[in-house]
Length: 347
Image (tube, rainbow, N blue to C red; front, side, top):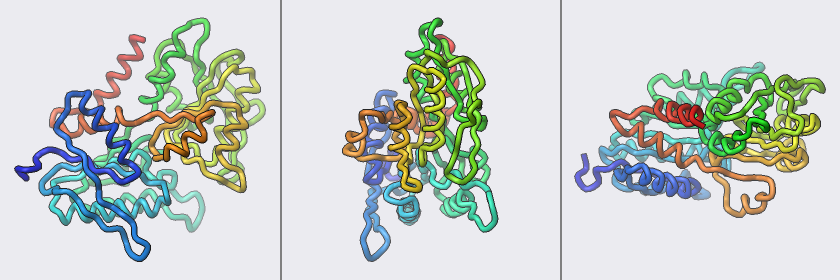
């Protein structure tokens, strides 16, 4: 062990530095002052791959906090690989890769011929780095992706733990229960999970969705089952907002049933444009409020321009807790879930 630098290290890329700063604050609030923060040193040049100027990492436990979406998923992926290679060359003790949004998580199978299973290929490449021992991520679109990792331990966190704290104040009144509506039958498990973590007076509903083509969706005209939403506040949880079509149609349909307010909660806000329609445009048209996590880093100016309908909540507290638990020999990520269920039970 390097006697001058014995403590675990959390490394940031430029776009994740604000998140790492928040994680450090949350770790201090847990009474965990073992960590120090540094920069990955990754910087892009026009005519060659990124270079890295790392701090001393010999024999140290390193947590590498990375985004995997902007400016382009494959650029981010390449930068992560470059830093992992530099860490191994610098004789790092072991590495935990913290990627709140794991790109390619929707490409877990062949939906049709000649398609790549990108999630599997990413796993195979990550597994070539022998010092990479663990990955921490949020809301994989397909949880079975964890099975692609044979050697790396995947800590899979749920965004419901974050959103439950924000929805809990809406469940105090038994005469005005919160209705949590699944946008489709495939998201029922996530919806039930959020209800369990919220506690209080919350009820469930679900919509039926058909998707005629990739990135297109529609909600069936009579596709709602569950508690009546008329006059109620409704939360629609999802893992990803990409083009925004699915969740916007869901919100519009629920409002047509008489809901007084609709709040969309999604862990990953990609917010892309498809066939000339932006996710932002469709979400605004739905009349819903949108709450996303900061799993995909956004600039302050981007958020300021959209603050009328879009709110971003931080993953920092949950990530700090996961880092705290995974860095302790007696730690357990399961404690996070047990405490959340206990909080809901006593709410």
